[in-house]
Image 1 (spheres, rainbow, N blue to C red):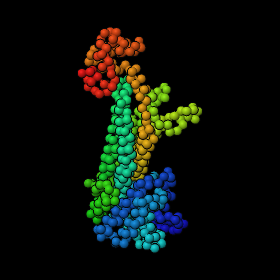
Image 2: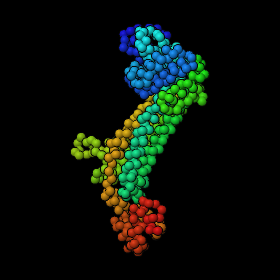
Image 3: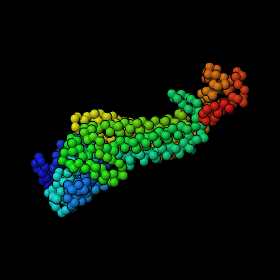
Length: 466
C-alpha cells in the first residue's frame, strides 16, 4: 500500500493502483454489486477527457505539455488499456462523481509515470486543476453517457440488426415458392407463401436497425460546458463547441452542445426515449423469434413447417430431443431488455432540480441492453436463421386440409353460402371441393381456379381466374 491524500485526508491505496484516495474511498463506501460501470462507458470517458484536454489547450487554458500528457493517458483509457483501474461499483453516488474522480486520478497518476514523477505526487498534472479543468461530474458523466451509448448502438447493435435483416431476406427469397396456410388469432386463415411471411420478419429487422440508428441520433446533444448546474461556471464559453468538434472527429458520429444546459443536466429524457426504442426493438425480435419457434414445433406433433438447426441436445431424459434454444435465448434477452427499459424510465424521472442522480444506473441499463441485444441478435441470425429449412410437403399438407380456402369462393357464391360449405366440411370431414360440386354451386373448372392456393397468395382477384 501507499498513502495518498485528498480533501478529506490521507488514505492507504493499493501500490499498483493508478487511482488515488477519493477512488479508494468510493471502493470502500460502495461494496454493493461487485460490478463496475461497463467497459464501453469507461472507454468513452477516456475519449471525453482527451477531448477536454485538447479543447483547453486550444483555448489557451492548459499548457501544451500538460495537454499532451493528459491526452496520452486518456487515450490509453479509451483504448481499454486501463479499464482495470476503474473499480467503483455501479451503485455509487448518483451523479457518477466517484467515476469522474476515478478518471481524473488515474490520468493524473499516469501522467506522473510518463513524466518520471512519483505516483501520487500530482506532478506535473493535478487531477482537479488540470484533468478536470472546465468540467464537473454533473456535465461530464451525462456527456459520457450519451457518447458511450451512441457508440455502442452504432458499433454493436446496428450491425447485428442489419445482419439479421439480411439473413431473413435471404430466407424470404429462398422460401418464395413454398405456399403455406396463413394464421390469424392462431386459427387457419387464407394462404400466403413462406417467403412472404419471412419478408415481414425481414422488414421488422430493418425497422429495428433504423430505430437503433435513430436512438444514436437522439443522444447527439451533450451536456459538456454546463459544469455544476448548467450555468457553465469556471469554463470557457467556447469550451463545449471545441469538445464536440474533437469528439466528432474521434468517433465519426455527430455530437453538439446541448440547446439548454439545464435540461441536459436536470433531465434524462433522451435516455428514456432511447430505452423506449430499445424496448420496441426487443418486442419486434420477440415476435420473430417466437414465430420461428412455433413454426418449427414438432417434429411430429407441432406445426412442423420449418426445420430449425440442431445446435445441442434438448433433454437429459428424452433421447434425440432437440429444442428451439436460439429462439428461447433471444426471447429471454428481449424480456431482460424490456425490464432494463422500465428501470431507465423510472430512473429518468428521478431528476430533482438541476441534476438527475441515477446516472450510473442509467449507464449500466442502457449498455447492458445494447450489449445483450446485439450479441443475442447476431447469434440468432448466425445459428438459427441462416440454417432454417422449409418443409414444403408439410406446408402443402396443411394448406390442403384448411377450410379457409373457402374465402376465395365469396365472390362466386357469397359469404353466407361459403360459410355453410365450410361448416359442412368441418362437420362431415368432406373436402370443400366435394361439397361445392355436390351442391352444384360451381362447375369443376371454375372451382379449381378459385381454390388454387398459389393464386390466392398473389392478392386481388387472381384466384378467380379473371
